Length: 181
Image 1 (cartoon, rainbow, N blue to C red):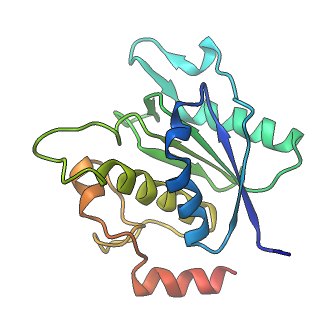
Image 2 (image 1 turned 90 degrees about the horizontal axis):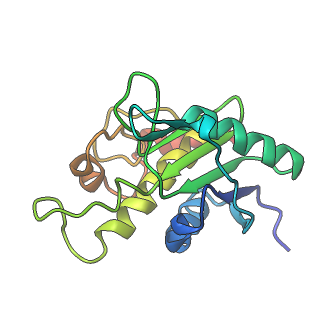
C-alpha cells in the first residue's frame, strides 16, 4: 500500500489535455508522488475569458480548480487544459502555480505547436508536456525558478527554451527539494 502524497489532476474546460495524461502522471511520479486523476471536467464561464486577448485568465481558472479541489477534499492539484491561457502583464503562459492555493494549471495549447525550426522529432510534444508539468509540480512542492537553463525548474518563455531544458532537476534544486520534504 502506498502512502505517498497524492497530486490530483483535473481536466479544465474539456478532456483534450488528457491526451497527454501519461506524461502528466510521469511528471508527478518524477517527484515520487502519486497521481490521482479525475475525470470530472471543470467547466469555464465567460468570466474566465478575456475576449480582447482571446485567451483565458489563468488566475481565475486557478480559483475554480481550488474550489473544486476543496469540495472534493483533495490536496495539491494540477489543472490541465488545451486552451490558451495568460496572466496579467504576460502575453501567455505555458503554466502557472499558486503556491498559497496549492494549485497549478498547465496549458497544452502552445506546447503542442509545431514548426520546422522547433520540432525535433515525434516525441518533442510529449517531452514538452512532461517538462512543463514537472516544472509546475516543482512549484507546487516549493521549488522556485532556477537560473540553470538546463534545469527543469528554469523559466521558459519560448518553445525553444522548453525544448532546451533537460528532463531533470539540477543538483541545487534536487538539494532544495530534499529540504522541503
